[in-house]
Image (cartoon, rainbow, N blue to C red; front, top):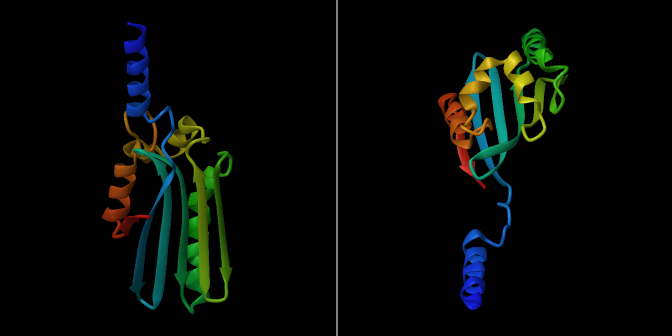
Length: 153
């Protein structure tokens, strides 16, 4: 009897992977847009484990030789992101160098206060799974609906 419990325990460890956690993986979504003398290069790096998104790092570049256009984009982006100024683990930076505006965000969903995030932007709720975590399939659909191409690395 004792021997069968040992064998059962070994089988359980083999089936469950010896208690190891899944390794974090990465998906990259990109899109390039050219319109009215403006080029946009968008890149979203999504780090996840299983179905749960841990972190999103985005780099959005707007390229234009019109300074007023770049300034307008900067004002709009800063206005949107300023709502998240007091949210820990939601970091952003917007800058213009030459003919390129670069906007970067770094959101750590494993540490962020999800209730605070939802108070500021209720549309985040559409990204959540049943566990209250950002769902990989949901965020992928949002990026693809916006015209991005996503691939797992």
